[in-house]
Every structure is written in structure tokens, then in C-alpha cells.
Image 1 (cartoon, one colour):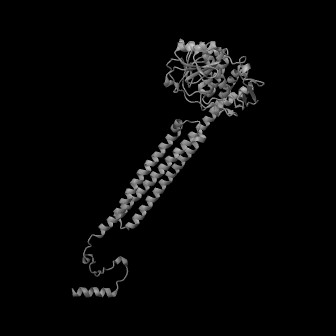
Image 2 (cartoon, rainbow, N blue to C red):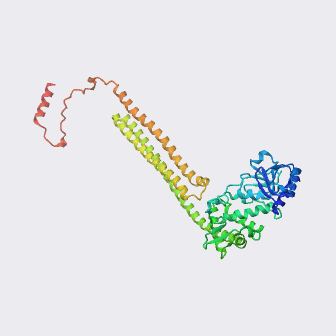
Length: 493
């Protein structure tokens, strides 16, 4: 409770303008203190056990008990008693509302913020806010599209948050309107989310432009009028819903941002203040943007279905072409193997020159290899074309969906071609070598056989043909010389 007493004293003094507070991650400086206020701060710090130093108006260190009003204003430097490992690490300890507001404006990389005096912890999509001694758990949410990619800024110092998740409540989280820390965070979140919904921000950082048409300019109120025109808690809730709808999905954020900013520009009739305009028109603009998005999604769905049908046809055609290439390669290999078997059979039955057999087999092998190479080249070209056109025509498909719907079916057909071609060419090469070797070996075996003796191969002596008398049916007269020769031969016998 002593820590809370010190924080309460500091917040009260700052609220009434009796102190100027500057808070860092490890120290807290309270300046412009009068004597009574200095005693209040130092007394609360001693009760809380905080180390401090007191300096007078000249910057000289002094003892609080030995000072008077002549040395006003005083400055008190307080050292935070938070764990040293948490001061500069992933934990940030803040004791005052002034320091909390300042850190919200300029940002801090810590994901665990410990606020002295926070009664109800809450979480955003990228941070947790808890008490001074609370043990906080943090679950990181998926990254969203950076608002700086959607909003054009002319100022050198950017006012649009780099990560919108710091200003979006986690699922199931709510804020309490009676908690001061919650209210301060809601006001800063409204400012940041309003900038995320605009199309442009001018060089001053105080004017938001919505292109429309018609074009709309909204201004942030100055410090004097901000108290009277500060956003209500319900205004923050509407801005929270609008920003959450836009940035829920990183892939759809750009389209939703365009639709919502256009509806905001069309909703009102004249320029005005951000808080007043959003209070009156933001809820209706959000509903109109959702309807417009659903209509756009319906049109996109039609185009997507048509694109999916075209993609299915392209996948079927490429698969069939790869299958045809496989079939042609197998047919060429089978033909070449048939030629090889025919050459072996011809060599066994006929005397064919083995060099002729080698030439025929080499021609068959080359023809088959060229057939397979042409099919492989076609498949390689198609593969490179799919890779080049994927990011241009099929961006609506995720990597896993594209792999399942396109790459896997075509890849299976291509692998079948590669396996059939590789195995077939290997078998054909082995058969070609075997046919050529057999042709030359069969020639050597034939040449080593001994031929039979020459006399066995000579034909027997010619025998005089016996003359046969002509048959009576011929009716032709027998030659006289032949008749006489026959009688003479008969007489000699």
C-alpha cells in the first residue's frame, strides 16, 4: 500500500499542476515542487522504501529537513525499486499516469507493462498490462499488415503506429470505464486507430484525409478544446471494432481499408473534428463497408471459381501431356527392343554383316534417346512456366493448396515419365550392347569351324542319259540314227 500512496500523491500533484513529472524506465523525476509538496513526496517515498535525492532551485543537493521556502522550487529524483532484470528487459514498470501516457505515445518494446495502481489487468494482441507485482502471461498473436503501408504520411515524424496489434484488445478482453489507466489507454488507442483508418496525414500530423469520393478532411482538436471534445468510451469501442475488422487478416487488410475509408468519406457532408465525426458516422460507415466487402467477395468468388475451373483444365492438360510423353517414350523403347530381338534372330538364321547390325541398333538407340529427351525437355519447360506464373495468376491459392491441387498431380505424372524413361533407356542400352557383342562373337564362332574335304564336295561324273523310246502316243517318227545306234548296241551285247 505504501507504493500506491506514493503513486497517488504524484498523480494528484500532477493533476492540479503542482508538479512536473518525467518518468523513465528506471527513474522518476518530480520537479517544480514547493516546500509542502516536496515534503509530501519525500515522506511517501520513505514509507515506500524508494531511494531519492532532493535538489533545490540551483540544482544543489540538499536535505529535506534543512530546507525552507527560499530554496523553492525543488526537484526529487526517485529510483524505482523494480527488479533490475526487468527494468531494461521485456518488462516495463511505470508508477504514474503521466509516465504511462508518455510511454504509450512514444512506444516501448516491452511486452509486459507493470502499472502501479492498475486494478484490472488487460491484454492486447501484442502486450499485457498488469499490476506492479503481477505475474503476467503473454501469447503472441499472428502479425497483421502494418498500417504504415496503407496510410501516406507527409511529416518526418510518423504518427501512424507500426504495429496495430498494440492497440487492438485480445479476444475476450474488455476495459473498465471507471479505471483511470483503462481510460487513458482507450484515449490513446482511439487516437492511434483513427490514424490507421485514414488514407493520408498531413505534415502537421493533425489532419486526416479520406479520399472518398468525395474527399474528406478531419482534424484533431487542440489541447484547449480536447477536454470538451474528448472521445467517449463508446467511441473507442466503435473505433476498436472498425480497426479489428480491417486488420484481422493481413491478406485482406488493404481491400478492407479502402472500402472503410471510402465509406467514412461518403457518410458525412462536411469536414469536421475526428471525435465528433466518428461518433456520428463511423458505426454506419463500418456496416456499409462490411456489406460492400461481402458484395466484393461474391464477385471475387465467381472469378475465383472460374479461375479454379481453368486451373483444373490446365492441370488435366499438362497431366495428359506428361502421360502421352510417357506412353511415347515407352513405345519407342519397346520398338527398339523389338528391333534388337529381330537382329539377334536374323543373325542366327542368316549371314548378316555384324557392322550392319551395330549401325541399326545404334540408330534405334539414338532415336529412342532423342524421343525421351524431347519429352523431358517439354516437362522441364512446363515446370519452369508454372513456377513463373504461380505468383501472377494463382496468388489467391496458398502454397499448400497450390501444392495439393497443381504440383502434386502433375509431379506424379512427371515422376512416372522419368522413372519409365530411365529404366527403359537403361534396359535398351544393355540390350544394344548385348546385340552388338553377340553379332561379333557369332561371326568369330562361324569362322573357326573346319570346312569338309574338297573331293567330298565334288559332284559325281556325268552319266550319259539313256534314250527312252518315244511313246506311241507322241505320233512322231523315231530318228533313223538313233534306231541304228540302238540295234548296234544290242548286237554287241
